[in-house]
View 1 (cartoon, rainbow, N blue to C red):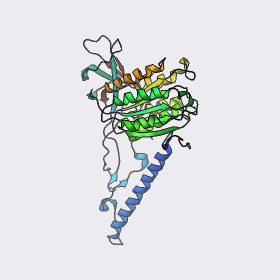
View 2: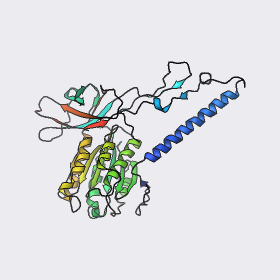
View 3: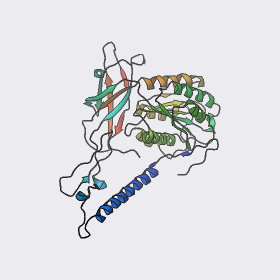
View 4: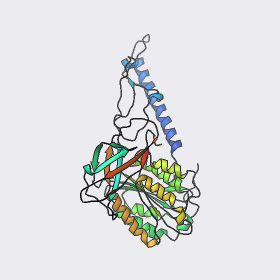
Length: 368
């Protein structure tokens, strides 16, 4: 898919999906590895007798395992180490994940919808497909965040951008010193107008690169931003803030494809602000609600543009108040089936606590 140049900025077009690039990069890496092994093997052969062929064991060069033996990518990060096969065919390297861990970022509220930030590890129980899981890690520290700001740049946003930009800047100012933020402006095409930075001046310049024309490819922008977070985020905790006033009418991606992307391998928490107006009516809010709820986020629909600043401050408080909970799944299957997650919390002094986190994930799927 080709992209138009942004007339109001020097930003490079932001692709909907980096699948083609990832495949090319993977092929290039494979070719490079083979070329390197050939050079090393050739060098060793040149130092031995011409009548004797050097074996992998004698050269000390590990041969790559066939692709069919590779362990599928899992929900977690883990050490990748070489494994010696049972037969005596040389130092065959088989790469595998040694640690499998699901990492959840959760918000807890009481009956009055007030944030609860003082719970300890025993208060939480995580369930996967209804089965209780043993917690392997827990903390409630204010850890750094990789934040993507994704803003509708279509024509109907022209009169709204000043207040939207100011609200977003207030959210950024509430960020921690180690947080990293990028800005994507989108209409029919998406543009990465500022890559990861903590420089408020650069982020402000990116927010002001407004064209306000074209249609609304919301799902494409979300997918591209989720991929960018996955491939480039400096820290584990990831958040997307999406602001739009229109229904999607131009995406190549579907709502289901966008949701699936968000729910792969430690995907981001998505917050959405839907500006109700001529193009986004009450009946159109379901998509934003579904996208946010599936990730543990919230979709807001202010009746007045003046409410956007308060909403941005609410999102900032949410981000700073998350618990991090991790567990190793008792289900060791590598199939890509969807697994349902639920986290419950109970604590003395609270009648009912509600935990908001992502609703599940696709196990065994790599994100490209």
